[in-house]
Image 1 (tube, rainbow, N blue to C red):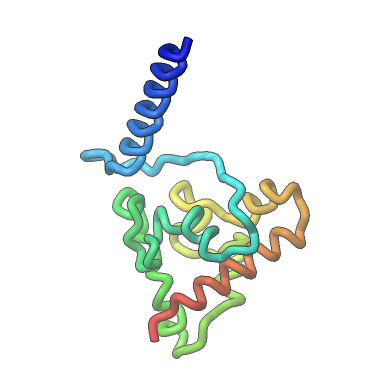
Image 2: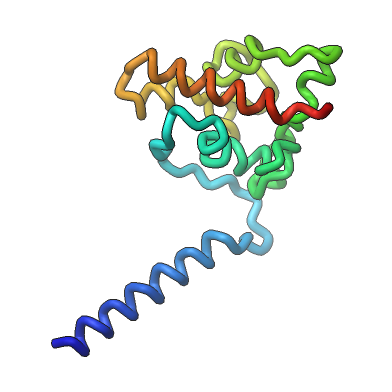
Length: 148
C-alpha cells in the first residue's frame, strides 16, 4: 500500500513538473494568443494583478515585451512611458478608462486584448466597490512604473 501511494505521488509530481515546464517554454513558431479564463487575484495588490492580467502582453517590466506580445496584431504599449507621452503627467483617468473599456486604444477590446472592467466585475460578483478597488490599485501600480 505504501509503495502504491509513493508511486502515485511520484507520478503526480512528474505530471505537475511537466505541466509547469510546458507553461514556461515558448512554443516554437506559435503566433496565436491563447485565451484562458480569468483567475481571481487579490484586489488589494496592484503588482499581483499586473503580473496576472497584464504582464503576459506588456511584460513584467511593463515595456510591451511580454511573452504574448509577438503574437499580437498591435504591439502592446510601453506602459512605463505613459507620463512621458503626456508631458510628464501620468494620465491616471485615461488608464482607468482604458481598463474599464471606456476609452479606446489600438488593442484593448480587440480579439487580442480583453477589456478588464467587465472581467473584474465577473470575478467580483458584480460588486462595483471591488471592481473600483481593482482598477484603482492597478492604475496606481502602473503609475509607479513610470520612467523618471
